[in-house]
Image 1: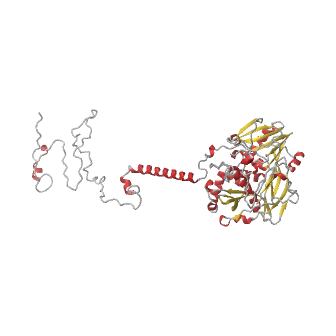
Image 2 (image 1 turned 90 degrees about the horizontal axis):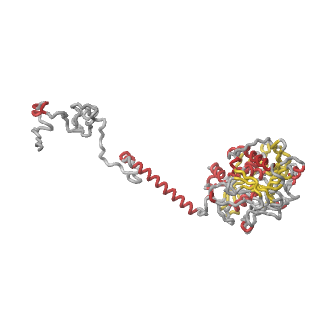
Image 3 (image 1 turned 180 degrees about the vertical axis):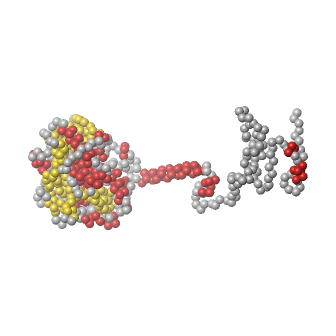
Length: 566
């Protein structure tokens, strides 16, 4: 049985705190408990530990001294008078100030230091709020966007520009990935002939801004010609004189040069006659129109009668581009005439301002290429004459592009151009390639917008920007050596074919082109292949009072014109 615990005598000090002086003086060191230190203190001093029961004394490899006890504080600095304030801090008992706004703790900087575990909670809460806000914006955008249920651009099914017939024989298919590795340097071309007449550019349009916009006029009496290669009388004459072995137009060459940037399907007819090669376009080809939002990720309406469908916008863009190219000219009858008149116009017929430069490039020792290139205007500054190409970008609905031209053109014109380069990369690259082929000194890009997003008949000119073709080509990453490398590879491939007719078709869903061998009477009057039935084609913009037509049809010269009627 365990004996009782005796507390011993505890002296009473009636004069103060601690043991009385008489008891402390009469106490000897031998009467104190063994290994228990005595530390006097006052009420203002900080107390240390009485005993440390966490100290490990069970390590057999270490020899323990008698002083190694739970009551030994010889190594403890709790009672060191010099360092007693090092870890001491006052506790502020005053309440923290409440913030004027927001929750009690989320934005309170004083509470943040006291509640470190809530920092992660605050970050997670912010992420959840951001996700909710993003989902809300996407939901509102999809509700307000026309065609909200339309599939994404990647899932859109494009139709081929020409119906592939079962009797056609596919000879080869070339992926666009091989085009990016091609390079070919051509010497400077030589001008063989200049035809047509040019009017001077009206420099007052360089000062047009969205605040003083100008209404786009309609030119119903001027004729625009889109004649293919083999129907050009000048090219036929040059071919009979054996001036070259390959013949094409700037529109066809630019389509080949910028093929890797194309998304929509297109086709080019190739005719091998003897040792000569002719690149043609079909009657009613998509090459006569201008694509809109071709490289955009935002899908366009698929209904052909919708004013914002791909085909309707292409017709509208061609209509706008033609009228813009004639409106920005000084129409006072003063023209710059060249060697021969317009080879496609009848006598007394009013034609658009255009000059045709028939130029020859050397592709090889025994191979030359002749192309018909176009410039639309001329400018004379300090008695120095410069050729201009005139093209217009058209805005149809800012919801599709995400940039409102009327608000951004004056302050952020670079952002507007960057958006157009993203949505219309192929069209801008083709315009640049045509300017380079024609050796134009400047490119004039007009920014034309609808008066109202749902009115595709009336337009206004918001601004006109000028670029040098070579500088603009480097800005859009258009390499001239790569452009000619693509043309040279296709020419070499076609030169290995037998005499006959072939068609080069861009695949509507894959980045590649295919070469088909077609019958000799293909695409003639009795063998017409249209990409769309007549009842499904969208008609050009026509209203009750006026009519705007773009006609591209027939083999003879008179039927090869696009009349923009108002």
